Image (tube, rainbow, N blue to C red; front, side):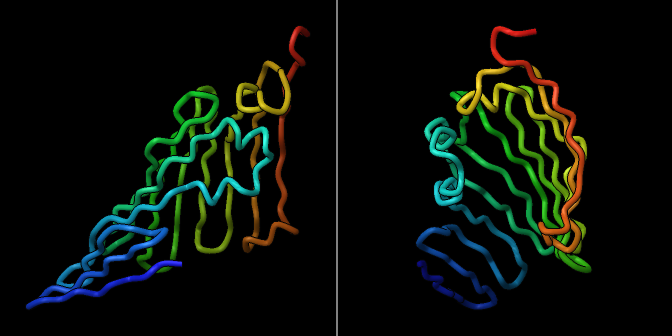
Length: 166
């Protein structure tokens, strides 16, 4: 739970959230500002072995009248940087794109206001290390029509070898 204080003076009006979401967003005379939140709450659904190797870090959103850019800071996985870059547009409907990166791994996501898609994802075996010792990679595409995961479809090319095998 958190709160939002609304402060104004003269021709300005700003929202100042506190709690899980912090930052300042000017509402008038022009929309803009920055919001931040801790990513730790998003780790709960992950397997315990994976959570143990993650440093959550923070999500940062720079808000503009047309949308927001997203990034993270301080996130690490298996001791190496875990990157997130993205953008959200709310002009003419909500659209979003993002890319999650880790050494040897790239997971691009797009949302067109209707469907979620992952095209050309590449997951290095390093990312699987808390669960299995392997070498190689997985490449994949996924489409989630209408954000209905029951109708999701995609393909994966798995080229993995257990540690010590070729």
